[in-house]
Length: 86
Length: 86
Length: 174
Length: 174
Image 1 (spheres, rainbow over the protein chains, first blue to last red):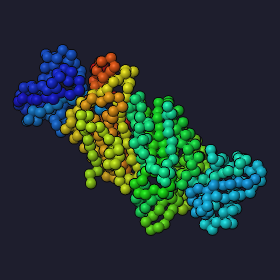
Image 2 (image 1 turned 180 degrees about the vertical axis):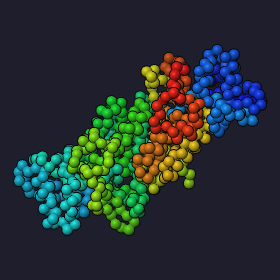
Image 3 (image 1 turned 180 degrees about the horizontal axis):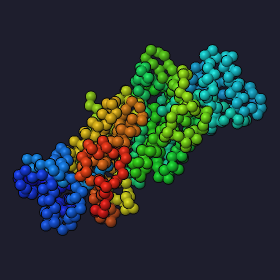
Image 4 (image 1 turned 120 degrees about the vertical axis):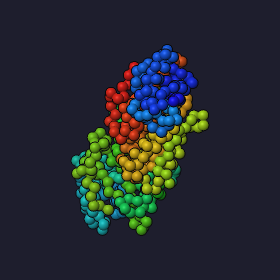
């Protein structure tokens, strides 16, 4: 399945377009997506820090998904680094 | 000495003019004024409640005076029933 | 520039202005502002209220507001701007009785300073509330006795843990 | 009539409006309104700030605001009106980043509801702050990880006693 990942906050400095498309197996879960982002970051983003990804959550448009949850079939996801609003 | 006492809050219902002039001995203290108001109230204000006076404080324009304190020489005082601002 | 502004607004002259209060406590150094607005509500202890008259001993009230502000400035290390305003006269439902605003570098101090000042004003200011009811009756509210402490004492001592105990016998008076 | 209003204001479209927030949470039944206003300040951790850019995942943020409001309505027995607004885009010094207002019958609930909502928004909303410094540098602020809890969990569990412990390791990231 194709996953279209929106990047927010500090992830924008790795990829100014703030969008990343990744190919994952059908039925992949959040943990698989997390691994794929880590591999992509290490391969393509010179300033990438795995520690930031480790503290980041993944979400659909409506809620944060935990690592064991299966990705939504539309493949639309977002990676959320630690938040700092207000 | 002549004491000009300003009345506030529930005391206004006893005396709508909100002003009371009392004659006290020179060097009188707040406790003397309290007694004089109590006597005046019992004599002239049908609805007067001593319990309200007992919970009331006396003050000059700038601060609350305790019962043992001597009245200011200008004789200007106020009686403050329990407060309920805000 | 003064760090606090205190105001008694006679309803005959105008209304309290929350926007002006916010503007006064704003500062490039401050990230947090907390404001409290007290309004006249339509029901109290189950009785339908049509309005409230506030009586006030103005010079002593303003003196007390200044003491309350000075105490807060000391408690929060001077990094604080405060506005304290209270209305006087006859108010209708929804009219503003009280506005307190506090600006500080961070939000926690702003919330704490605003609350501390609101409680001090409520418990120690020479202000009296007479509620007017729909049946034509009017009653002076029960309140906090100032006998046992001066405004400054109350503010310093127990503004946050006020328990309405012996020295504030909210009794059976009209 | 809706009991809460939530808003994301893109700075390209306008500014957050505290007066409108106050008006929204006002009600004849309510005697107390507490409002918090978060502004961009000129100094953070000793560095001179010229502005802040707020990035936001808007649909999830609005969803979270609605959950935060629903939780507060439940906690305060429904006698509550709430406004939650947050800015998006590039702000200058003094611009408003966040406005939260709570109207309730009495002041204690107004203070508590406003604080609870402010903390929940700060700790759980998908919003990211990039500070711009006078030397031209820009840094994404450290923040609270959402890994360990969902927004609803955080709001319910520890919004008042947030200790920035393990699950919010404010570490050494840029």
